[in-house]
Image (cartoon, rainbow, N blue to C red):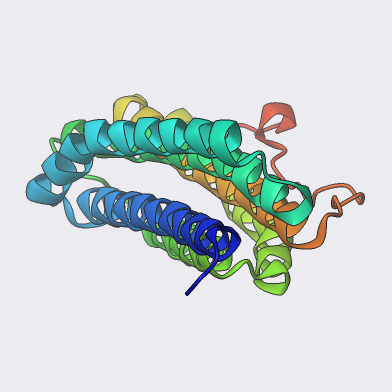
Length: 240
């Protein structure tokens, strides 16, 4: 017969697995939401936009469920060392996932307005940015589910690439606005969309830092690779 101690250890492991499953489920929800938002922008897909917006309350509910579960674990199990890091880190991860969901919903809402305009330029730069953001998000969600510090570190290092594309888009869109006032409204929406995508990348990097700490007990001490310089960009008027 199993002892009481064995039962306690087994039930505790079941609860930790349950926590990992809840986080993975929330991550999958957010990943799908971001995918829909990107589809809505690049392809003018109104159904995808509506789907991304409607997912937001579900993501919020998932965050609250995980928060309540973590409080229960902390109160009843009083975890130590690695288990404590993982349980507390899950709160930070879900907080970042919730913010990613908010940004995805914002992208989807702006896509509905953007679809009313005929754009005189391609969205190839934005498409490249969405590809990198979605790849980072997928990888960091996988890293969180697997407790993979190596994969988390790779995501952390990839953020600069997203920032570089954002900076290029920022300068390009400002130039279009200066060349023709009719471009101001659609380009403004594209600027906000690009910024929201850049922030999704930032939150994916936050998750990567948290996963790395939960897995290793060490913080990433070097400065985060950060390339967003749009606040300081100088755009020269186009010459006739």
